[in-house]
Amino acid sequence: MIFAAGLSPAWQQILQFETLQQGEVNRAETANWCASGKVLNVGIAAKLLGERTCLLSTIGGMSGEAIAAEIEAYGIQAEWIRVEQPTRVCTTILEESGATTELVENTSSVEQSVLDDFLERFQIYASVADVTVLTGSLPENAPVDSYARFIRNVPTKFILDIRGEGLTCCLPFNPYLIKPNREELELTVGEKLPDEAAVINAMHTLNKMGAQWVLVTDGPESVLLTSLEENWRFQPPRAEVVNPIGCGDCLAAGIAVGLSRGQTIVDAVKLGIGAATVNLGDLFPARVDVDSSANFAEQVLAKELPT
Image 1: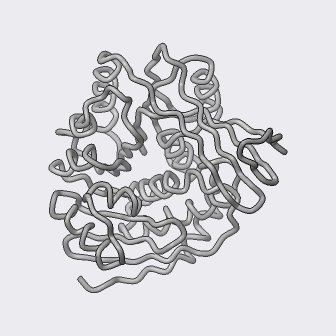
Image 2: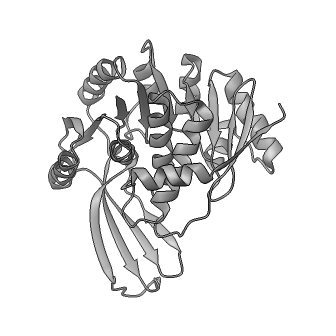
């Protein structure tokens, strides 16, 4: 079972324009809505890749009810913690030029009882999952070490898609894989990383701090993977770009699915990249196709680098 958990779901609006004119009235050519946010994207992608999936998150208001209905329609087992504040709404703006603009509403504060409830349910499900993906930002009032408290003493493979101090707090608990993008890696280590060698050195710093594997993405560029003993570079296949939102979540979901099936970390990363590549070509985030993901995974070029 894949267990996806996080505290920052979203009800997503996707608007398409020929060209967006700042400071002017803009009329969208199309408007669509869907459940999204990192935790929901991971759960949906893992389910569509063919694995039994459970997710844990918060929902509130009419936007939360819309999310719950869509997740139920996918046949995903969901543990919802109900909150008074309506689930945030985020907007993706797509232009014909390929430009993507994301308008993000921050995750609202929650009561301490919500965090306590989340912790209790999280530890129950994580203790029986094959792979757990903990992802997304924390509510504004949550302590920075909240995710570290969640994963403490839970014996399972963790994939963490978080950043900054919240990530470094988790490293002493030896997460199986962390996956910051390059910008998030720079934020976490507190310095600019001008080239691949600097990126790999920073990744090794996080390995030494406790992460078994560190995976770093950089948009359409190569994906890097390190442990204390191995360095890998992956070249994603080319694909048409419709909407890039959710690619990192599909990458995490694909890796989790591969690991749950007993694949090596290298093959699991290939599957994750395959799923992310499919996501690029779809208007809706994380609505991946299992066969297309496998086909793209076969096209990923993996090269071991000197340590």
